[in-house]
Image (cartoon, rainbow, N blue to C red; front, side, top):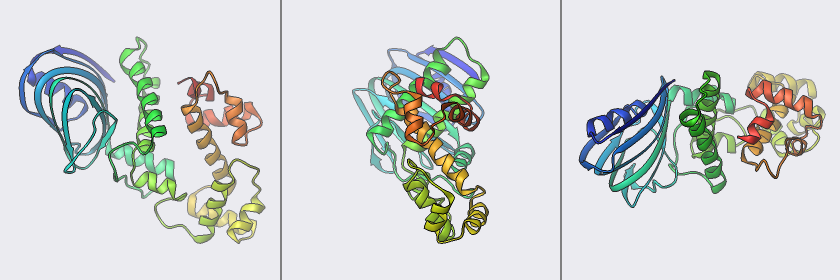
Amino acid sequence: MEHTHVETRDATTVQEMWQTVIPGARISRADGIQPAFVFHGAAEPGFGFCDYTVGSTMVTESDPGDQMIVGRIAGPRIRATYRRDRIDTTVPFVVMDRPIEIAFSGRIAGTAVSFARGDVDEAARRLSGDDTLRVRPIGHAPMSEQRLRYWTRTWEYGRDVLLRSPERAPVIAQQVRSLLLEASLMTFPSTFTEALAAGRPARALPAPVRRAKAYIDAHATGPIALSDIAEAARLSPRGLQYAFRTATGRTPMQYVRRVRLDAARAELRAADPSAETVAAIAARWGFSNLGRFAAMYRAEFGETPSTTLRS
């Protein structure tokens, strides 16, 4: 991953730096730059991350092209237009498919993170279980205050690791890249969040499998037996095993475990480490053996539960 730090008053250099994260970024007007543009960035193919400050009267357009871009810009006089609507840039916003135009006057502080569209769809398919899902936005702002806080904490962690830490191990950078992508998918409304809210992949599943998944999702915090799921699905246990694996690639009990692990991970990310413990969160999601939970969690997500809680 290539890291960049630039301080300049040259508009051409400003545009070039923005383009390391957003290739479709263009400046159409820039009346002086004071104070200077200060840029910190990290980028590699398919991913870019930056924060910056600049003072000017400027008009920019950012075309996402084949990327998903999440940005945030704070300043006294900013006008942003996306899909013909005025948007509030002081909270994170997502841009896909269409350009965003931003005009500002005075000093602003901004951040942006970009992901290749192919990586976005691949992550959404992995997380949803639907190998045909394509992510399309259905809104530009965070879905809730809780999701906003979750994204902000993840972004702050990403900034500290990618831009501020003197230790830049590639494996850690890749983990941060994945965390930022997953947080962005979970924060902004899209066909991905619709599929998750429906409790099933976006493609149609057989009715017995839909009933089985709905039962699992509704009872994930309590004891679940295969016979209970089969009864809810209106199949024999053997018939359920076959139908569920054929439709999803997993057994029903593997799906139970993944639902609980995902829920525990979401709680660990949102929790205050001074007030919550890994053991308490694991217990809430049916993991009574802490050592076994930690092993399954690490195998699934590539880090320990305590690492997620501290981040």
